[in-house]
Image 1 (spheres, rainbow, N blue to C red):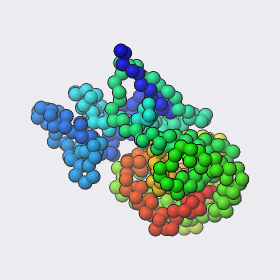
Image 2: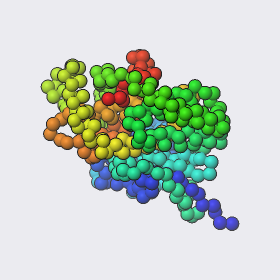
Image 3: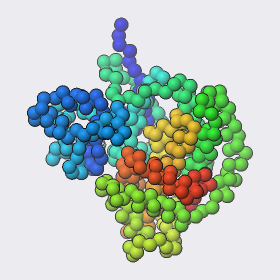
Image 4: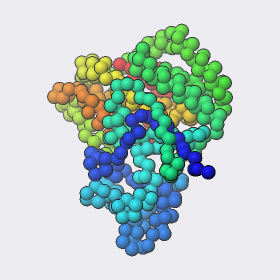
Length: 408
Ligand code: SF4
């Protein structure tokens, strides 16, 4: 009997993705620790203790703090880069031992694979500058495509296990609705983001074991609330508080900056602060608020009036990659809050860059900020905890306060 073929589902921009390798402008081996999964760790321990085998064994460091199969150990770094990146920016493990010897992190990045009922879903991280370029390339709405792998191909490694079928079914219903909501250009983007928050807040208040029928009826009810104008009225009543928005986002940047090693991120933040506070006084003032509002009105808003698809693609991509429509209860809402903070930091940084007089806003600037910020925020569990703690401490976790972060 022939071996069964298997199906991959992925956003269209991933179909022919190839790592740029040595040509990459910001190689993923820079600025990050390389996690080593348990299987790779054990394989490395069995290598001969000479040459590259000895170097790998010396660089391995067990994760004793919160070990799991995927983060069982890491490669100890002495510099900014992975110890196995050659001066020509090629991986020594790949070159000398072959692809099978890469740890899952490197074999998969920037992709993430999840088993679904009868296929594998693939998403990818915008921390990779090439993925960011692809996500932002299409003014048309991003679509999912199917790819049937040849039976002779091996099942990819590092696939996250499937959820129970009920949780998966409700997740698909919710994600389908959420994606259509984010694509609905009849509403301003900030309104779509807040509507998504209302939706996830409603879902989060339900018992976790929601059935497919209960999710369908919840989504119907939500669509009726949207059509009635009730939610629009609520959103319009949220105040625009640029000062508070800037102060909250500035505290997030302050928390991250001292320990971050991603150079592109530091460069973007410095340029942003330079745009908003050209005197370098470093003290929050009404002048900064005025400059921010003017940059929003005169540069950011006109640019995104024509290129709004970039922010839309970013958010839809985020929803797919972080998979939070498949998380249940409070966790889905907390994931949403983290997305709003990530988005608020992105927007603030772009407006700060727009405030500089010598460079017009352009797509390349947007791509660079998106990938650099994602490269810092995405792998850092501290960001999520600190961001949620900061909002809770400021009494800002409800949706009307979140509106302050994204409404201009
Ligand atoms: S960041 Fe992306 S393109 Fe660059 S080296 Fe890593 S996977 Fe390849």
